[in-house]
Image (cartoon, rainbow, N blue to C red; front, side, top):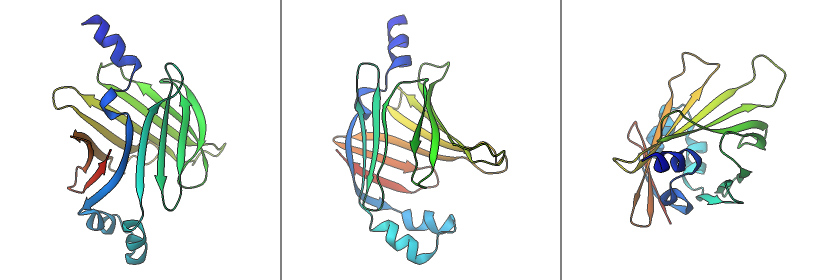
Length: 176
C-alpha cells in the first residue's frame, strides 16, 4: 500500500496517457450558449477538430498537448510540483504548475498570467483521480473571482474512447 501511494503521488494514471481525438459532442452548444457565447462563435467552435494528448516525456516528466483546428497549446517536459511558463489558448504567457495533493488520488494544475498587475487572471486547474470509479475529474477555479462557480469535467475511459463529461450535462467523446 505504501508503494502504491508513492507511485500515485509521482505519476499520472497510465490509462489517461495517449492521444484522444474528439469523436462527438452532446449538449455542447447548449453549454456554450449558457456561458454567453454568441451563435456564430458557437458554430465555429462546434466545427473545430480537437485532440488531447497526454504523454510521458523524460523520466518523471510529462507533455500535455491540446490540438485544435484553431490553435494548438502544449505544456512540454513538465514535472509534478514544478512551475513553468507556457502560452495559453488566449495567446498570453501563463505560469503553470501541476501539483500533487496530500491525498493519493489527486494532482493539480495551477496557471496564472505572467504579469506584475494585481488584477491578473489566476486560474487553478485541479485533476483528481478516483480509483473506485476509474475516473479523472478536472475542476477549473478562477482564484481571483470568488463569486465565480468552478467548472468541473469528468474523464472516463470506455474501451479506446476517452469520455469527457461536463457536470452540467455536456458530453464530449474523444477516441484514442
